[in-house]
Length: 591
Ligand SMILES: [Zn+2]
Image (cartoon, rainbow, N blue to C red; front, side, top):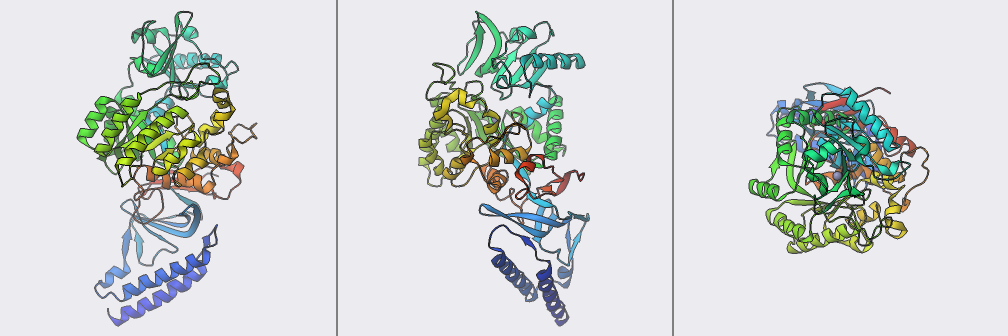
């Protein structure tokens, strides 16, 4: 290296390290501030030293580095085990990935598309919802919204209004009713849906585990008093069908499915909403092949920008197809897992319990798939390297699945299967330790608070004491607890997830009571659950979930510090910018 350059760089080192004394500012929560500063400085000096001693580089290389974009003046969240600290500084992006995280923009950096001044905003790794129904959310956005109704009569009113405003629909779909929210907490029947329309009307319960169809819908699907199904129930009253189909019985409905155009519209509508909430990745909890192909096409056309980790809805034919064709991976789509159901939901008494329900005698819920079926499917998935993700709510369903997983884990020394239990809602304390084998509990903190007003009725005081035990599950699993919402069952808003996880309170203004506060997570654990742990649960920890050089430039940006703001304000926080793969996909700087 020529001597002129050496002098220039010596000056640069002094200048850079000198400057950093003034501009270094790490907002720090722990006690490691000084060691971090020192080690960071030492690293910086070593890096410049090695540049100075490298005679192979051409002089131009020192002066100019073109990057695609620079985000300046942010507080960049970094994880250190289970704690979070911020680096006050800048990010550069190349090819959609994080190129540098630095206290200052290096002198030789030139940004092709300019610099975004974040004005001191807080940059978090882009949020990932580890369990959601993205397509279904989109369809729900375009159907009759029955969530939050106070009575069945209110549902009927909403159905009538929708039909009046949308007279040309072929099928009327609604979703979101929950009899637990009504004064009369009884399942509805279809008698009041008759005469409203001569077209099929199908109304899904909030959890998707029960559906009410009018007689046209039942007739079209050839469902009558003689129809039978394993793992579900066709409800009858005085020898008449009530129209209510629970769990597997829902599959008996043969109603015109939404067209691909309608589905595409739905996906894009769901995406817009997700951007608003700072979501940069979603684990789609179960879709058939045709929908996965549609998603891939929309992503390739660059219309759908949301990265999706899609679990395949299992069926014998889907298993045959995917195991033969192998996993699918693009920059935006990852298919390497199957979604199974071992039972139903607690709200519709479909969750499989070891003992009878407290509010329905001799009723234990439903085994959606037999033990033998699950066992052989697990073996097949293991032999072919697929991840198995099983919906398990009741204590019996969880025990069965954990035992099946445990057997499989014994075959392998590697134990990096990362098989998941989705929901892990009522896990007997004796079964928790099984998660320690490397099985991942994938939970939804807002379920605990949404269900708290009625879950005790279903299972009684003893069993409720070990339900929704997120902190205990996190400990059992070695500190891995991916979080999701199960939207549209719950709101998409990740801030509600954080609030529910840390306060264990519902968003209802009257609610002052925390549900089993000993099972609360810390804010850091909640944030890590929606980022780093979610990435781990999808084998993507080297690609997303943290703000590190080489990872995708996915950010959720806020003007408020999520870790330190008052607890009550969390649910009201709004995202100011969302970035996916180095592209700003959402911005709202309104105060
Ligand atoms: Zn779900």
